[in-house]
Image (cartoon, rainbow, N blue to C red; front, side, top):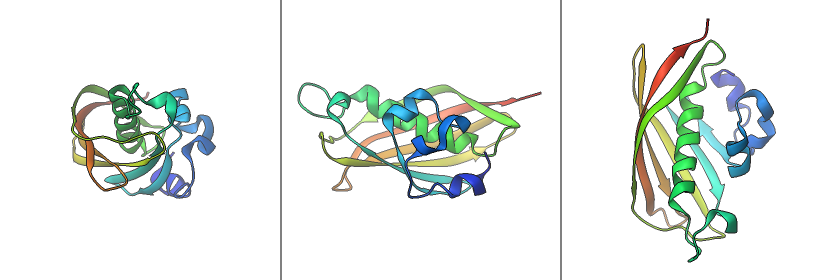
Length: 144
């Protein structure tokens, strides 16, 4: 799926995209695409009870999944001829988001070469406080 087709989903939940780019984990997380261009993407997620720890705070593994999926979709948006897979990810869990809140994940491409893509992502709560920050590098696979 190219950037122009993906832009048509701005304001919609990505579960409506179906099997074109959405895997079962992304469908379960159910992000709403707020914005995408060639180098940046914003998605909104609602923190549901099954995403929280016993204190009602967004669980770290779910934060990682939100970051990984948003960064991965942005890295892979050029379409069917190229795929990128994560080779590593670093995440700092900084703040909190609670059940019932919406969080915004902002993903950015820092540098894209012929074989690696370097990216960063931030999760913000409704008060615009940082919940988590992460960085990743993805290896570009040519499909032939």
